[in-house]
Image (tube, rainbow, N blue to C red; front, side):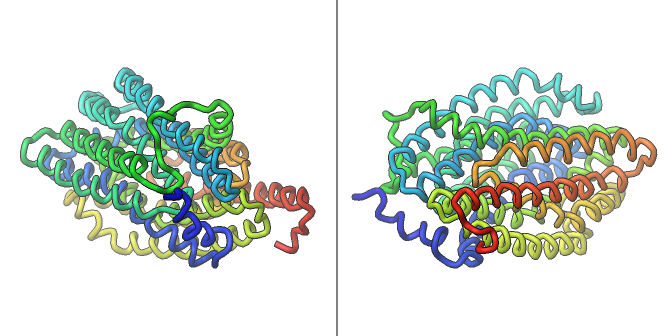
Length: 460
């Protein structure tokens, strides 16, 4: 059977079909997949908060930014795999596509093993540097070490899912995460509520779930008749493909990590308020994450649609992708952010019934949810720039205007006005600055792309 038999059923939606409806169709399974992934984290927070107490909840909260800081660099490389595979697929470069698939999976496995070993070794020193309170440090370190056991599986799943999505298949990653997510919830309740394992049980459930999702996506790639079929005998690293993948993926990973660095700094400031505020922050940011999965899903759609059209040489269509994606992201971000804040009194009860924790969480949610739509102004131009092979500019903007600017904010504004509201205002202020820079970069690089092909910018 021709591996490309089903290829034409999907690609025309990206390079020829209606954009808005095509991006929505593409984004919905990603949105649901992101909800499942967030459900992993929310289940951790909710179960440990309900059955193990505030100290255990604070321990999980303190571990989150550290885990994200370490793995985001490597997961960002999956963006490189997605863009490169989308470009090869859109341009019908079958041999290069096959090399990219096998290189990506090999890199994911090797990086995952390295990251697991390194993370287990440095867990406690990094947590200590982040300012985790001494009373929860042993619990946080235990959670983090077990969590890192699942990291190789997490990377393999993310790279595999990126490959499937590059050719338009967003449904199978959703199916696999649904299975893994259901397993995560069952194991959370069993390990924590039934066996009393506390943070160790939560981390173990997450690791098992990650192994399940990775196994399912690799199983599909081994058995499929589509063009992304995985042949174990062909697993290797193609140097040229790897360099191109890293050229896109490393800046994206550094950009993601810079968010984690900035959030780690914010977490250190939050830690200074004590375990009650730490628990409130974990709850507020968990709810905020659910609000903006739609924005992230549409951003992924913009990235893949751009990569496909760039590979096909359909450059004028990229300007339309910016317009449609931004409109849909803004509508989604505003609606969900405001709804979450309105429903906050009920949503917070999923995690805790402590009135003091809930009061602090609502204060944080006003900033990160109601003003969260500002993220859209970063998401769209940055994803499109990556899709046309300009991944360094978004990285620089994020480092300077998010990471560095948040450091400045904490050391200056927050140092003089030590309130939670002032601290979390760093979110919308820094994202707005990065968003402005993102649009400036898009118009510069996009005009250059059109001029290089002698296409009038006004024609797009």
